[in-house]
Length: 84
Image (cartoon, rainbow, N blue to C red; front, side, top):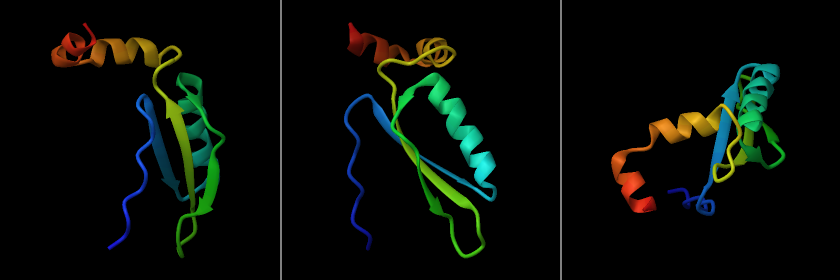
């Protein structure tokens, strides 16, 4: 059994992007960086078949547009009640 990975701090999310093409993975990471502050991406081989795996951590506490408007409209009523 593999040990559990550490959980990022509140308001942050670890993102893993796996793609057959390094360029495709970088393009997806770029979109995320336009919406959220993030750490520098880390790149790894994705397996024997080739491909790329990118890891980055995004900060959802200070989202940029368009993520800000999406996050606001996608919150559940219970999440809004918790925020006060």
